[in-house]
Length: 504
Image (cartoon, rainbow, N blue to C red; front, side, top):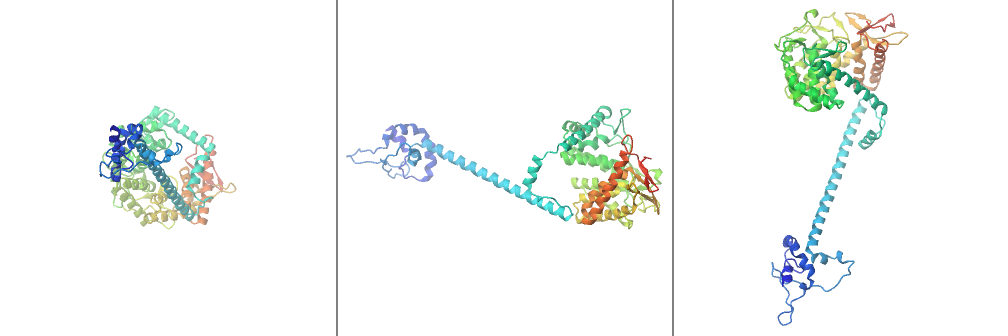
């Protein structure tokens, strides 16, 4: 009787509702051993006059069917469903295994679909960028395919470039470790005396300006140490007259770059703090800023040696950093200040795009006979016209920056001369209507600027601009190569059609 009662819990001949199957699986394991050991319990009960009295289902009361007496060979019995129905524990394991295999197969199919979708998305993105390059006059040798690009990236190792990269990293570490040892927290290290000096008001200019380089080079410990100094020691509440230009490009730019790379909000907080201290410099009747400001008092002014005028480069080289700060903080006041300067420059912008370096901050007028130069005090104004256009994704809202820059490049072509027979190209300076055969070493940013902007021209014009960039780069290379120390001089003069490569 024990075996009969056990079999009531899971009988293959019980015409029960399928909803009971979970109960059957759960209880089956409890009695499976006894069931397997007592197959005779399936035999019909002949009690009651020799007639077969079949048991009834315990849930529905329906009669349970007669056991089949057909036999299967031992080799095929594991394929028969009756084998597992008589062994509920094994049936439960079979069901669990089937469910697990189904889930695993579904997950793999899902991963494959996700992979294919991502590859498709990346292919579309590469194709879109490829189209943009073609529109800009740049053509790739092979059709863009993300899998080919990934394969090429992993298989091709440029040992020469890797070696050069390591040498650059070694040079950086040499300079950085010396700064840490002799001038930690100061603006600059004087390499001969091995002393630290605060030539920018004690704002840790070298440290802040190096943050992004440390991060990009993977110098994590050095970056962490510098980051902690910024968080704990960098203080802008100083009774010091800071250069608006130098503080913007070194401190604001350095902090924003570190924030963009690391997403550490301490850098954004510090960038906002120092920029807020610079803002009063733009409180002029024309909107063209004063070039110096006391960081603690907020009092702005221009140096007396320049007759109270603002300098072109100092006034037109804050746009990138201030626009970036507005984008990251959502506060438009920074962008509004610097874009107003460009609007003022548009009012006085000459047909050749060459602005004199001295500008009255009250009237916005230029001093007509002041120097026009791509060297000191003029240089980065032209550079930023191009870069703001790029920063703004070359959209309609920043189109005027590109237009101003292209106009200025026509002016640059009018200042370009070539020596004979040595064929060195150089960029003159202009005073009124006369040209000076002088080129500052600072003007050696021009080749890179031209190369960066060439892609926005037609193919023919882009080729002309790139050729000029290469010629000027060769001249600048020789500025360095011609000296015993391989350090260039501040400026160079070109006489009588011959180049004088002796620094002045």
